[in-house]
Image 1 (cartoon, one colour):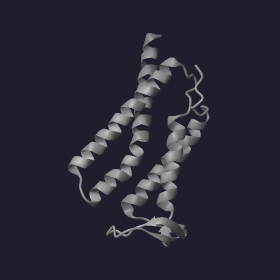
Image 2 (cartoon, helix red, strand yellow; image 1 turned 45 degrees about the vertical axis):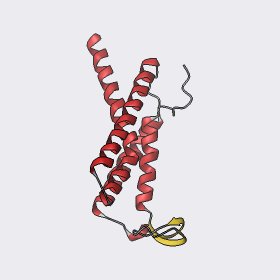
Image 3 (cartoon, one colour; image 1 turned 180 degrees about the horizontal axis):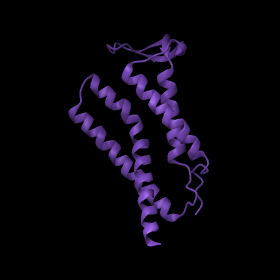
Image 4 (spheres, rainbow, N blue to C red; image 1 turned 30 degrees about the vertical axis):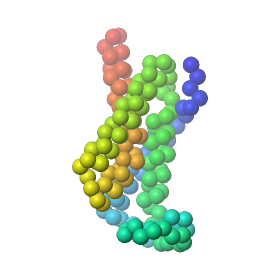
Length: 158
């Protein structure tokens, strides 16, 4: 079976080299509210609102791009890790990949439902912020965990 939608296996290493540093830097910047002046730029914003939510305007605003850069790199690295072929991609690996994707989707929405029920106001913003990445993270964790279990069971069979 041909898997046209997956990246070549060599891209997985590149993905890890992007994902891990970007995730650590992004987490550090968010938790410590760290915004180095190097990334301060004036940006055009087609949809700008203040924290009060008083309508939308268009125009220029001062923005620190570090969060956006980290977010983009986490997504790009995560996609490369999650959707690169394994060295030996077969039907069993594809089945594990599909099941992990379904599991990650369920997990993502369970987290979101719990956030809707138990988290309010600005705390919900943090739930939504991290929820953008949970599908990728849960998929990567579940897929690689299941691959590890498969390789372990195959080594016992030998």
